[in-house]
Length: 205
Image (tube, rainbow, N blue to C red; front, top):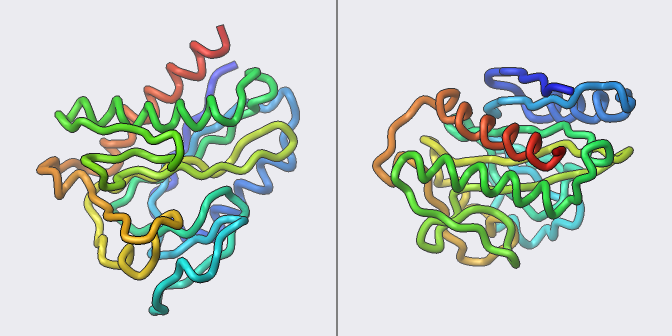
């Protein structure tokens, strides 16, 4: 069964999150998996086990308590967000496998632009020289995943200083633009999504 791609453009976070929940709760084993490509209005999102002390200062940027794993992070225009609505039970995938697929998709994409990056087993996400450029957060319900990954492209990184990104004090963040790569965010989505689909198809073989 193929995977449907949806290019959603710029979306307010909460309505997109609600749509992911609705899709997941209404799907059955005949429902095709979907990948959503989106950018969000500025927002902090706090994971299920998020600790309030990781929000270091308040601002006019809203904070949404969401149902993914992980701690607090930041979304804004210029950051690529890819949501993976995948029936992992049907594909016989473990959660850690899916996390690795998302991390590897970012690593492979960055390599195409000459950037060397790595994943860290104890701190999910993707890093360039110790600075975080990509994050992963998932929720599994009814044997299916939603939420996904975010990859910093060309955005205002200042609000990351208002938080301990992903719960790590002093963690520095970076983005493609700061690494000398200038690319449209939707164009950046193409190799990321291609890598995810290839990996999912390979896992299903």
